[in-house]
Length: 152
Image (tube, rainbow, N blue to C red):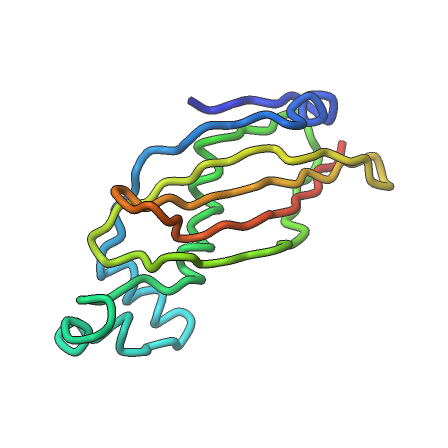
């Protein structure tokens, strides 16, 4: 279920709130190959299905940065912000990739609003703790704190 925040006051009211989980998303080889083409990262563990079968993961895996990039569209399932002039991706704090995402696996995003701070220019800074979970796996694919700024 998507949480909706109206304006800066609505964003501030989210401090400490667990936003829940998104739906599961299956990671297919086509997505991995497209990401490899876009980033020019064609390492065999991502794109060579035959060679990867004998590799450390038993098949191809998604790029860590692909997993991180999927936070953006998945986050839209968790939070909708209305009544602001502009929102920007301000950056990331600690990012880790504890477990690989094997092609064919399903992932989902869990999000929690860690804190909200006022920033100059009639804005707020939203710190989000994200965990990209892998269906059936104990360790997450990605753990990150993302920072967004929203202006009235």
